[in-house]
Amino acid sequence: MAGTRPGFQHGRSIWTGPYASDEAEVTAVMDVERFHPLTHDDTLVRIVCQKKKCKGKRFNLVTPFAGKAFCFTDYMRGLRRLPLADAHVVWWDNSNDPVFQRKLLRTLKDNFDSYMLVEDKNRQHTVETTTEYAKISYRCHRIYKTLHEHMTCPDIPLTVNIEDDVEVPAGTWERLTGVLDTYPEVGTVVGSCRSRRLKDRTAHVPIAFTFERSQSIGGDGEVNVRDRRLVQEKTFGLDAIGAAHMGCWFTRTNLIRRIGMNFGVDGVFGQDLCWGYQLNLAGHKFVIDWSVKTEHYYQHNGEKLSA
Image (tube, rainbow, N blue to C red):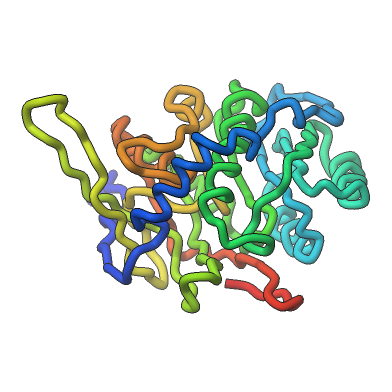
């Protein structure tokens, strides 16, 4: 039929056991926020350099780095598949490594004409250094909140977040911006990215979820998210889902400033999951394009692997 847009399906949930939602881990996240304020100290964050030419740029390109030099070449290989001349780049360096920071500075100056580099001297928390996922979750929240609410150019229409251990495939830009151009109701679209959490899972599963909520009638009308369920992975196609990762994440900038980057909403913890949850509550769609399959790198026993 003329004028019909290709559709996307609502993601079908599968239950494969708890994933960052068991009571002990939620309690641990709350404890990090309540009893460990120095998990993130704003006084240890400063802008190292910036060269802002935001006018005419099509997207903010945001990446927080934790010094993962072992996959920086892979990350950059993926980045070069994007239209970098149209990017204003905001990089956050939490490596605590002067050699790695010099590499970031050199890469920015050699490849971009609009950029900012932020130094964060807080202790880093990554899957390579700890299995205390609550601390990783809280640190990610504080970093992403500062980056996306205060350091990107708000007038640039699109914000793209690529994590430092992710390589995006060819065609990522065309596929994901195509979804946003075709569906104005979509606020965020992501590629497919698999988990690498090694403590409680050996199989790599896609980081994509739906939510089930409960709400009391009468009283204070309390709302709680009772469950998060993994979405069944597909070879290709689009699914409307509840939330996903921020490894390859394309979002309309005005929605970020309007909704904010929050933490601990209706029992949902984790920066990436809170964003998707609140985006849906605000009446926008969160979509995953299964055909955009990223590489998600990590180290285990000194070996570089990919999920």
